[in-house]
Length: 263
Image (cartoon, rainbow, N blue to C red; front, side, top):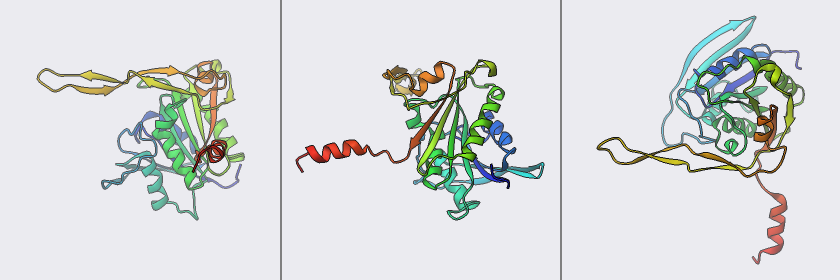
């Protein structure tokens, strides 16, 4: 671990006032100065979307010092990826990057296909583009007010290992915690992104006298038979760790198509 205090950037997709990000930010003060730039309102499902069509508002929420370390919190009326870009424009630069980016703690799982849509992981993707070691953290529960205290020691293990041995350039980590008591969690498992999809996703809703509208819900269809799929690992009581590559090229398939297509 570095002897000097680290500069840590924190964001999420649940908004700056979410319980998970505030638990995370205070935990990370153990390792250095923490800058939180998070959406003003929830931005779930935004992946790496950017606010290209409208202006965004950026404002300070609070700042404090604790044991000589600074925690500053800002809100942005944009997406999680916007928040990373704002941090790189306002407090950091390509020549003066944060030592670590941590996105979360997300309220809900980001395993399997959810990782594709996740704003939490969209921020980690954006951090990886800038060359910042980036980690997304998610707790697998739909409770509105979950207890994050039981995963604190496990988050510290993730952070300390990431500092000591960060992912290679272009890779970010997707970490999903089961919602279990501390002594019920079986430990960590490195896993792959699970395969699956949501079906029956749009449900109609009509108030009296109004047109029929639709809201998104759905059922998850598990299509993965692997025992190292992240969503299966979490369901078995383990913490899943998946390294995601921002280069999504399938090189073997590229070569196969090059040899077989008549171009």
